[in-house]
Length: 514
Image (cartoon, rainbow, N blue to C red; front, side, top):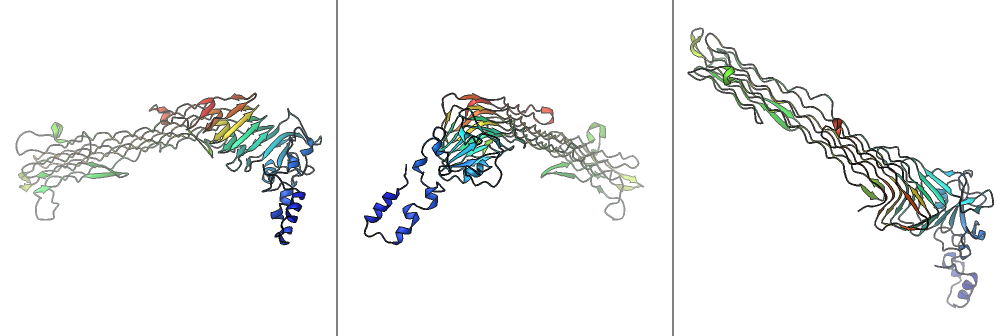
């Protein structure tokens, strides 16, 4: 340990060096006589007169050796024994290399961060000349969703003694309750109570719209026999079938097959609906022989779209890092697929004299209706928050005579509900025959869109007395570890229809994280 240079040593050094300039004699930084070296302020070397343990030697319970804090003090204190800081965090910030001594009365209702390798000791009776009691504890109670005490990566060598440190029940969805977090440094906690509250339940996954997408547009109707569409004199010799109808669903297409043409001597078949296993096209009327819409001329309905995949159920133990604990959320489902378009209806033949004694084309078939759009998916449920009394992230932590109690982990959030698929479009109506010519056939109805996948349930929150990444926490003396109850995993969306509930959290006295 570096020692403060004595006045005698300074005097001897100055008198024994002929080349020492007069200017250096007034340089307090060079001689280490600036006030922040003498009173233990920031950047100072410890005062050798302050080395004794203040819990055993009252000579170090002084303004020269310590900064004082009392939760019952008036605001605006300067950290002296007579006017202690009302905030423990403020005392820690202004401690420099002094110890921080805290009164046992009242509660420090704050989140405290130690950013230097100092010693913080509670258990003093500020109404009795700051005497220390082995049984007394100073109390820290942090607001919800905050770590009660953090020992940061700049605080190697920090020591905390005689404190009851409590983290409140977490309130924000998925938030954790952590009493103490040590971030990558060597630290010692002695004669302490570390008590974590309950983790908060995970956020609910967003639901997809409850109403199905709008029904797809119907197929186009065929044209009646003997119609004059081209504007030329007399009936047309060919009447085109109803045009195909396309339903665009988020970049995916469902197409109702076009209707078959009506001609003078025959009708042509319609087109197949796209795309799927059904949706066959209706046949057109041949030049000779029997034919009817009931016997194959009507377009076949399209197949229903495939349902979207369910979101993955959350599992595992989560992750531990400098920010605390992060659990696993459930996965989002996938969108349902569009239904297949219906097949186009077959066209009919006309004749040499059906159109008021002149030749003309028969009626044309209606096009198939396009399939409905698939439903949107539910989103994954959030992870339940953790309850952790002590979290050590790549730290070297020693516990001496401490009691660690964790609360309960939060429940995983439920997955979001799915959206049903939209209805397919109706098939277009076939054109009407004239005289002895037959009616053309209708197109098939489009298939229904597949439902979206439900969101996966979130992971239940864990409960650990000690959670660590890196070295295990060293335990000495009478140290007790008491975990709570883990949170249940969140159910999958739409009443867990796909059985994709998240896993239950983990409970353990000690849990190692990768």
